[in-house]
Length: 546
Image 1: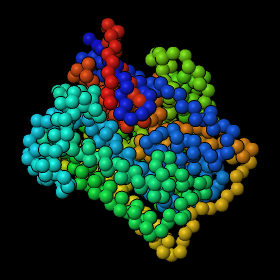
Image 2: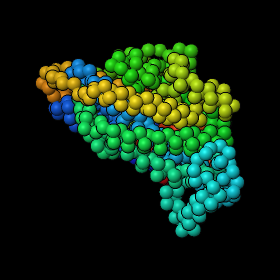
Image 3: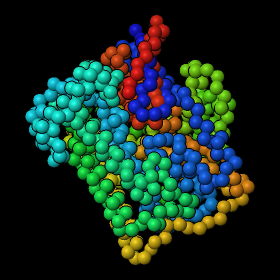
Image 4: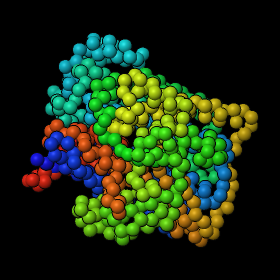
């Protein structure tokens, strides 16, 4: 007998997403992903100065605020034909690296961990045992019995007040939670510590970006922070980077391995088939050849072949979206003509379009980046992935899963963080040699087209611009959450999250924590509603998860 349930909203920060799944015999048998918020930035930008586009587009998100700014600047750089100076490339890489460090710490602890960690169970933990476990796996500070006892007291205070606050609305006590009380206590302590650390890490943006959120330092042709390229500011950035990497190495990675060890069965749940990565962190003016994380596409989980990416093969379908028509267009010729009808999973059910590459749905994000890099023999990635697989005692096939997606995010955090030290030193060497150039002049053309491809914490992000009369004639954004959470296409192929949810076990349809695990592993940047509906009784359960 099948059931349907609603969890609404599922988000822990922002956005508007509704996911509806059908469950039979304890497993998800079908799924539909619906974005219920119209964005409309493409319409707002028409007729504006191309140089202003990045200031508007980075307001698309209040969390990873830098990424749309950079994609927009890159597409206008491309349209005007300017090559930015080496120092501007390094500053842009450092700001993007800081974005990755911040986003992934926030995602693991504050957006995803509570799907695996039972905070209430931590009250039963023995602080002495918790301290021994913590010290056996990491030299992280604040790991003494008194430290964990103090955290336990704070949690008890929440419970005694009858208001769990930031821990409210969890499915505490659910049988799918498998961590011992002591590991739950360690994770809860680090959840609180990560709140402090993410605020510190965000300050890296303010040093060269003037502020966070919504940085102010990008310009077409380079960056505008030349006055901050001095010993004091670089040292401050380096200090915050080192503090963040200490947290990554001594807290985040050990926590990921400790928690994953109790959930190895999730190495066969929540996988998808195809993967796309634009690549990120150019090491010179040559792209995509010099990208630190390489560009590529993997089909049918074939790690023996990562294909080159041809942007001409990208299309956006609208047959199941609330837009005019039912065709598919490349973003360079894309249209934004909203036409809401009603939410009908058999017809149109989302404001998101359905991006496809070569006609196929593609997962983007940390797992896609790590798989493409692994397939291309990227040495830091191969070393890190093989190390995680060996330590957990799981095969490479386990990468294609919810567990693999979550582990990939931690793996690339460490890889990117370690690479940042080299970019800081390159910047210092340039300045020592007297190279202080951060901007290349250009002329805005009467007409032109440009494309800016980034790989950002949530995945492949592309902006496309058409310029006429030195104004924006057309602007299109294809964002990571659209790739991952878009609806079915004209060929009725489900989007990646719809595919990933099918087969997910659901022990208790009234408390579907398993659905949250897979949806949250994609790090959706939209408020999410997960709906599980009973096709026999048409009963719809609704839940709030904060």
